[in-house]
Length: 375
Image (cartoon, rainbow, N blue to C red; front, side):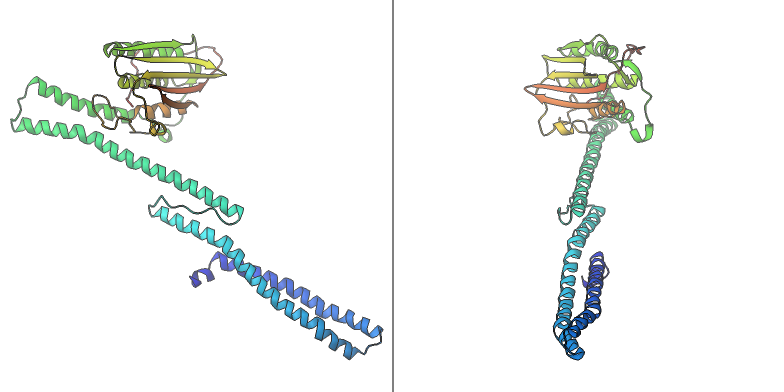
């Protein structure tokens, strides 16, 4: 510990403070003993005192006080220097040790906010960074675990069916092949969802054009209407006549499609789904609301994370790949917009907002297939 202090920042701060204090005290002492001595002798001689007696008197009184003051000043300088060095170096040392813990994989490392304001601000910023890294590590672990589970379940089922067919335990009839097809299709949906998940660092900026959200939303609702009718659900569409924004038309179609497919998947019959769009204060807001059990408050902050699903059972009939809302967030963010979710009193609403533009020539979306991925 001593060797660490001897070569550390605290030692250098203390040494610099002591040197400065000694220089200051030395200058005062020299000025007092040299210049002050001569002035004292002149005054005493003018008053009729002998020079030798005056010099002895000066050395006895002023000189002794100066020497004692010099010693006290040195001790005080050393004490204050050590105190100052510890106040600055100790918090920095704790930040360094915490950074090493994080480098070793311990993302729970935190440092207390202490020391001078600048050092305390550094500690607070470090803690914010550590919290962000801890959250990213949690997301990474959850992503890996969920992705492994999503792949493991259909692969295990396929393996079981194929082994049973090989050993002639089950007949190779239409029902068996239908089960195999369903599991293979589930893997294809997962792979397709992963392929459609945007990578903002690799794909580069999207080319945004003026597009009418109302046109895209109506096209998406028309495509989704048969599925809602087959599920015994009511789909209500309430859209302003025109909602022009700057966006990627294909990406906007995917956003609308994903939100409608989520609502279809998570609305128990008989239920209702509302698709609303309006413009207010220069912002276009689109909402997809559905009746049902809702989303627990603890899950709301995480529904836009990749592979996060409120449906913990991962039932193949209801739960999807957990990528749909992550795609929605990535796409809307690439348009310069924001997303959000609210759930209360048996109704869940997922919304997004994009800055509106003055309507000129708006790209009308063709009524073709809307890509989707479930929540």
